[in-house]
Image (cartoon, rainbow, N blue to C red; front, side, top):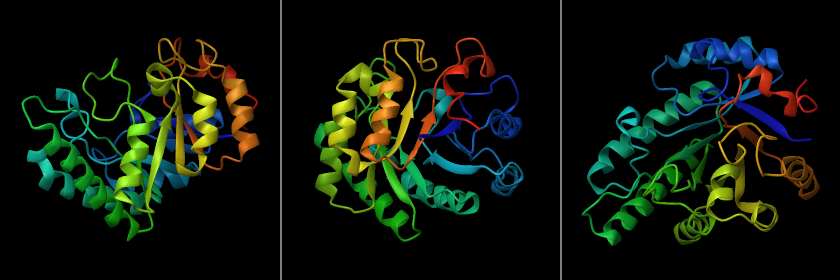
Length: 259
């Protein structure tokens, strides 16, 4: 049976962030993820996880100035030092939270910068992070994001992420496969999940259109959940969607999976 993690950046927005841990546990989730932990004290977050018996499934490496529209800095040639410092900060949080995998956001390709330099920067930064995380027993994940929601994002298709993993050659580098993003960019969800299972360490979901909960759009999630069981997927599935009419009201799709 699939294991679902509540994305606390997207779900339970009816309460403040620190109260969302309790809300997720009360709803039956055993794992949580969110974009970033860095605005909060790591020991405070660890205490909330322990109190509510939750697993910290995933968070991202620092990704620049999110409020200003930055969506990752891994591909930015003038931010390499900042990226490397962020890897160290992310490791410190992951170790405190017991988080065994981190996601790197490639970022938006900068205008007026040589494309080869951007590509080389991305590959070098991802290689650096994969090696640093391996030393701590933490997996590094890379995600493709659709260019309708984030125009210019450096990695927008599964094949690009797979090529990066192949070319870097690290055994500590995996795909974070976001079903919503890849439905918008390429489809072929079931085929990709089956053929690339060995490279996929984490999955995220939302329906399309609207990025709302499963059952509100075109994606056949009951089929995909059965398929993931059949092919032996062992990871978590992060619920990274925007509830259409409130979090609790939108959890009917998950009742059979949450205790």
